[in-house]
Image (tube, rainbow, N blue to C red; front, side, top):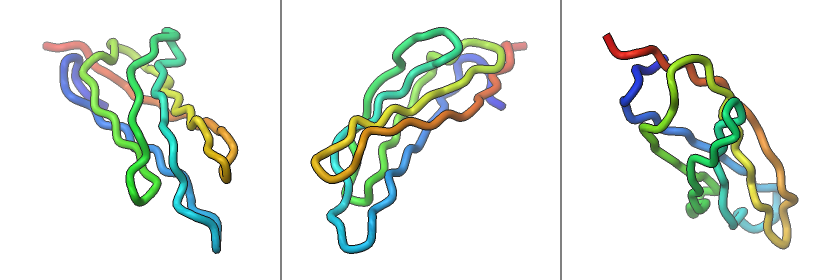
Length: 88
């Protein structure tokens, strides 16, 4: 869990297929609980996108990472839960 106002980082990784190039493109991070688009991060040379935010609201939030795809890799998405506690 995190506390409201704390920075929280999310990492999305697109696995490289054997013999294929490293994935390219971007990942959009969405709070699926509220429908809010949190932001977008480009994949790095290892096929990872890292996004940091302080905009997660208190409670249990489902964060969805939407990968845009590229000429080799299809678009995909995945989710994770992030619990944010209220400040004391």
